[in-house]
Length: 393
Length: 213
Image 1 (cartoon, chains in turn cyan, yellow):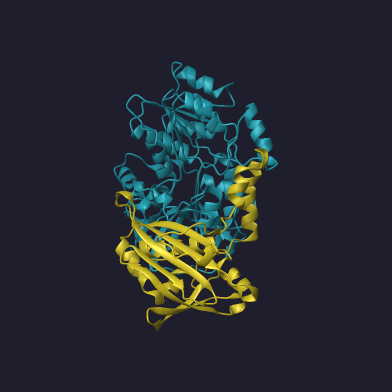
Image 2 (cartoon, one colour):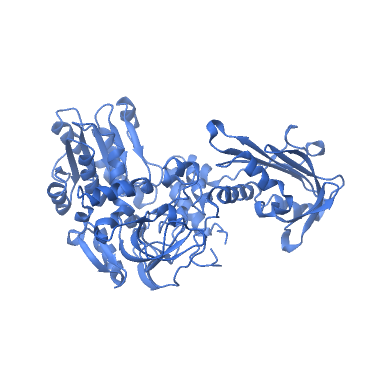
């Protein structure tokens, strides 16, 4: 089969590799019909995620048709049309039983590596480095899916791939980010980053009852989407002097009730601390560029909540923790417990309350040209917000 | 099928964590990344642990919580002949009568190390303890204890192993088998045990059967 293989920073190649097969008794193999490039794939593309090996298959947002099942599967059947969560969960451990499936105890074969780095290991992830298990990803024609009964979410034929594909990651990620804000009627939510997660977080915040959403970015196309589809007010951070002050002024001096950092570790900024982070990560003296996070902490109102769907990997520098303490902020974060959200969010899509496909800028892009798509997405060329790859092309 | 930490991974992990630590006086992350707990010397007698004569030897001590009842977990450990499925340094355990059994471990260069051991404590659903018999070349002891976790949240499984390598070349061999990665090996053994008992399979990222992963 053909697959998008990683060979180093900014070096992706579409290669012929052996088809996957059933290895463990609860596995399924699916034939991929649609697979997307996630913003977090760009961290790998740029070489900032450790423990990638040459030849690793990329991708963790995918769906398709079940073509093979293991002997111990019960509910998943050959021919099922399914969306696969990017987190792999056993369904049986303490964390899975508590619906914290991205913290599953039993699915990371390289848990020792995560334990060495973080003290504990979360679940295995598709296509996201050996630190997270070394599982082959979904930017391929076929994928081996462990614990298929637990993960695979059957979707109705009348919905298109584009409508349901994002149940695999960005929609649940955005929704969990909004849910983590503990939104109450009348709340104002600020969202850093108008990429797919930010845009869907805007929608989710309104679904959960927010009164007002203010979105922050610098890319005109994304700010337009935040306004047109998201119905958010926007701030172009390159047009103003101080995002924190601007938010304060727009919220009557109080600050947003909740702040969502949908940017993560590779943030850009125009301020002094942003330059400092760039310099430090460039010479590998730092691991993250937490500019959005700093602003979120500074802008958030007293007693408010900072919700962090953006990915961070290491030890963060110059975090205004004193401000966080002084303001009694609540922090919510982590990899998304995708399994918990897939079915309820599928209902939102079925009922027409939300159609996540509005984030797509490039449809049915040939898998064979995936490397070009990564470059375009990374450089935000051609108003790129989301690329969906067609594995048959 | 077991994943061995590649040199590039160690380097990457080092880069991810320790690089930041350099800026912060090269402390916290470096410690977290670099330290492997070494087996500790046995300090004192414990009621659940048959100690070695004269308090000699080293010890490995690991606990994991498994979402199964103490009885189910005990039953899985009690069949000594299946112990090699749980403890990867063992090749076989064969009963030899009179409550004793012959244990064989993987030695360096595939030379098996054997010793005779006996069960010294057996409390159904609570504890199994064993130790090598008097005069065994490889003086060692072990136990596994099952304790209900607070709030009905599974069972805490605690494994203690202690071993006193004899002098000479055999001692070196024993040390390299049991002490090779003593703590890390027990940790991985317990992880796989937990995966089997909870999820009914051992996690692998292999794409195909027999793929070297």
